[in-house]
Length: 265
Image 1 (cartoon, rainbow, N blue to C red):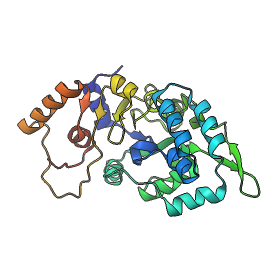
Image 2 (image 1 turned 90 degrees about the vertical axis):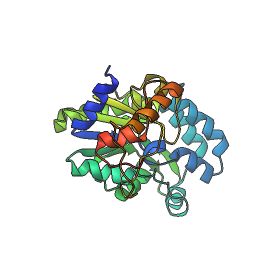
Image 3 (image 1 turned 180 degrees about the horizontal axis):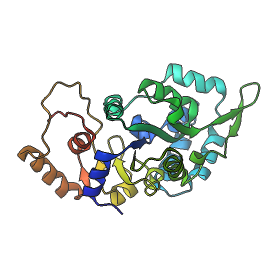
Image 4 (image 1 turned 45 degrees about the vertical axis):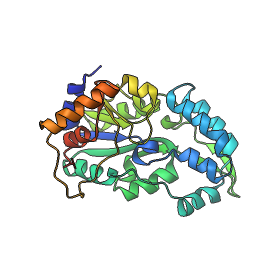
């Protein structure tokens, strides 16, 4: 297991960074939004919490939730036009900064390909770098299930994708960033894991991640003076948050400083 310092070092030198999507790249859980859109939100929300916390296998939870939602192709398309997912503040700038450093960025999601592809185009991630679940529809557009052969359809799938990327693309250092149990599972083979708690904090991730960012990504376009990680202000903030949350809790300043973004104080 990597230490906090080792995690920071890996992020500085990573040649690939993989982001979870729901509650990380976007503020919400896509399947919960779809369920609400289809009129079954309350029934599905608790299942999602259990799945993200690792209480049940991801595949079982996905199957059960989709059997309740039964989304049609028309509903999926209408969700994107009428209620598009909301990007987490600063994610597009963070992705751009990583890419300018020559880092390959991937989206690895237990969500649905049609939604994740839409998000990828918004933050300039190539569609070839997207891994997500694929829904199936009958000729009339009714729900017909999902592709259960996709690695993202089951627990441990994100780790298998990262292992394959390292083997096929030759990546030496890969970082996984996400909020849930399936993201934590990907470390290893990911060389480091950063828990993201800017939208929701999962207890399992809080306990096990060496680095947990509690704030949303910060845009580099704010025009405010960057916070120097060696400054007394930075040290005071870090000490305060360590006392409140434990030494593994690192705030927005650290995550973005190590990623190469200038940050507001």
